[in-house]
Length: 196
Image (cartoon, rainbow, N blue to C red; front, side, top):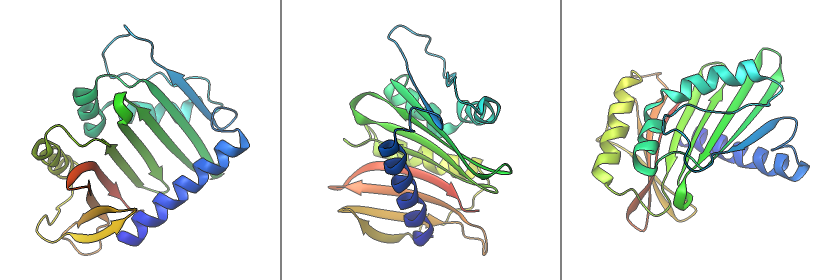
């Protein structure tokens, strides 16, 4: 599980850097929108202008209902900015990454992997206001996604000075996991993922 988290994480960072360097993050492959003050506080998304609007729209609708996204809105209000990137290997294998920026550097991201994998991640660089509540939301989210997470045996590691705890599904062969990341003993990230 740790290998897949690292692999996908480094791949995403690498692709974002390359696309940004090539000037494509806000161009042909991606879009960026900003939310003005005073807009509606409903969690509906406005990501328009992408050449693959139908595919992106399907994922926008999914994220509108995502429990971690709704928790982010509860904690940090509406996102200030949304960036979306659609990429593909071929016509049948498309990937989407939606990145929502909130105040104070808080970020929610959703990323899918073909055929059926995805990650939903909520990062709060200054720490979550209530760590027990954040952990409770992650546990409820995991159950909602059909995971049977073993919360008693985390796989622990250190990444970039942060303490990472990965909790796997207790069933053999099921690649669902929940992740909690701590910085200076403060919970700064929660994530749920399904490996393809």
